Length: 113
Image 1 (cartoon, rainbow, N blue to C red):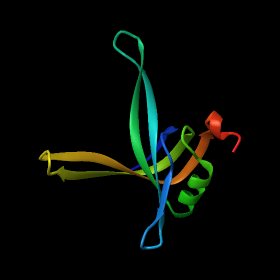
Image 2: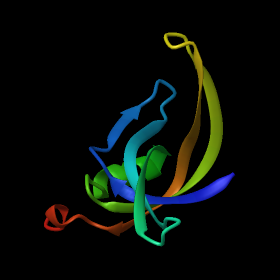
Image 3: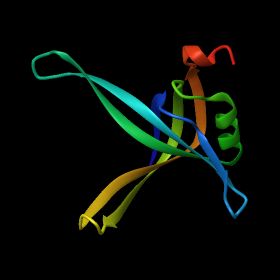
């Protein structure tokens, strides 16, 4: 499944080269969802996502994006489940792999770099 996620980068973009020679960047983003509750009051819920970005796109992201920047990713969403043996529970998560990104807005502190 394809999706678009947009959020602010919450920390450093980490990049590594795997044994296979592929490059991967991991970036954590905070995505704010604004909605009205049942009383009509405006509410904001923040969801955090880890996005994996691959190869040349990873290199480009690490060069231009920094903490606080607003970034939009086109991702492939893959459901993943695993057993947390310590708590004896199944953890369900969504893996987000990006093949494109757009820097929507740089944080003020990064604009002079």
